[in-house]
Image (cartoon, rainbow, N blue to C red; front, top):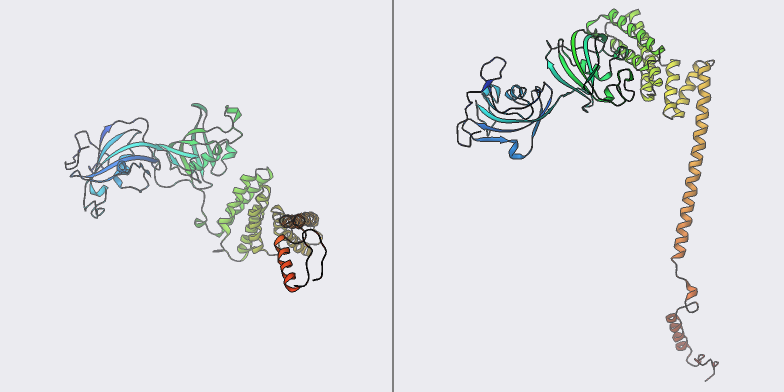
Length: 466
């Protein structure tokens, strides 16, 4: 790049990278890179030096010895960068000449960049990684786009998608197939969780390479029939051929909402009976958005809305209990009791949840209420017996804890008292009961008070009268 004070102009090999070909962003390669170009959403890591047309430098990551990172195509940098960097390969260095409309426009970026300034950047692509699609942003699901899709819409939860999958492990293809399935139920069709989450971000016609860490793929089980060991990372090339979005609550009238809610309730129950609790949970969750608000429901429809919604919360509580999610189960019981304050099932399942988090007193309160409402209910009676046993066990444990605690306190007190005694002077090791100074002081006082009495002298002679 030319030195300070020179004029920065693009060379003859500069290429226009604007979509409209208007010459607003010109790229001139200084050093060729290798590999693929980053796709939108990728995290890129670059070094750059920014100059004005007169050659004066206004910014430099090299000067700070600190590479710059950003997510490509997300509008976090000027337009020219999103366009130009998208064409780079790892190791590539280029000059990017950016007209104002692709940089900081009429306003500029005071004080260093004036209005309507054309800028020149030397950019080096150090590294890039695919777009992170994982919910926790832990790099477990990354997308590298091969070809863009069309439009702006993407599949929603429950949408029926048609995809072509090519799965690879250690460079070898382990499956290639077309599959149509509702998003959220992929496990029933051999589609792993991470792949489903990725497809939710696809547009129709998109083709991308998806890299999955093991916890989003086949986890610790692997896929023995395909020679995939436990804890294996895998790769998929996915093409979304078509999809039909699932119906949204806002697009339906009250009758349609009830119909959809009952459809998902039935699906959830079928999965629950088959022991597929995760899938049952997904289906039961879909009931709530259709019925949680009473807008548009009247009369018999309003009563049916409450009944189906109550069943949804009760079934969610039951499924969460099966999965060991006691606090989630408790929350759905709370919502069920808001709809029906004296519902036996809600009280019973909330008591189960309280016992699951070792709160037998709270469980006892719910069970007493349930027993009062339905004294002959055997399930309630059996759980009361279990609850009472838990309470006895807890009290016994607390008694032992307190007994041990008091014994520890007593022992500590005894040790402190013993330590205090050890630190006291041993008077038996001194001359008599009093020390020498004390004896001399007392003898002097005696002699002073009794001048006519002679004390026993050092030879042992007895007292003599004067």
